[in-house]
Image (cartoon, rainbow, N blue to C red; front, side, top):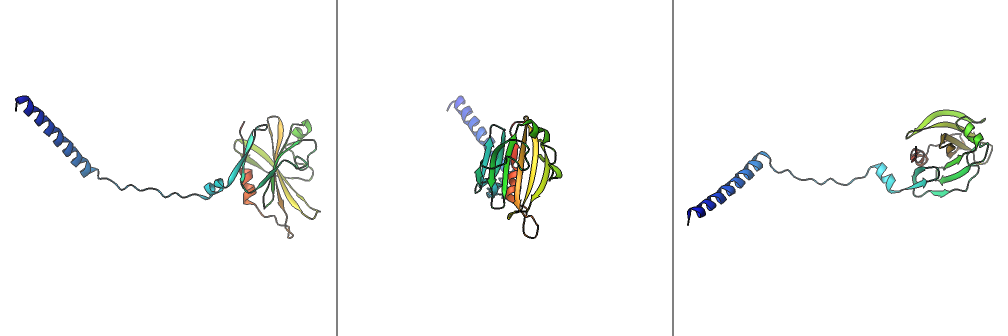
Length: 194
């Protein structure tokens, strides 16, 4: 073998020794660790999203997350309880616990009265949904065979009065049960356009 051949063999042997030595040092000071695969679990919020639908409205620029099992309708009157002028009923969600509905009006009288309590309403603390503040009002509709507690959250958005209303039945003892589904819809409301 020539001198050049021996030189190539020596270089190859040195490279192999370097690779084996490097591997030994890495394994000694950084041993491999067991790879664990996380078990897929879902939180209650994720489970709710799996059985939820999203209602969107491009005219008024909002969306609502609601239970998939609820029915929706735009066929209700008036557009908000205690309305003093015309408006548009947008959507009503019928849940086993009660109703959640959304209406809007760009009538000047409604816009002016939007964030003020009506004659039968009691003022509630404001409700913050995203970056929008809603004024809260409530009153009980009694004197019928189905007494109800109506809670209205109203704000002026894009020059229109937008009303979110929850309607829950009042029991014979005068109590009103809270509804996780309806509260979830209320909290799941958001304006897409600010």
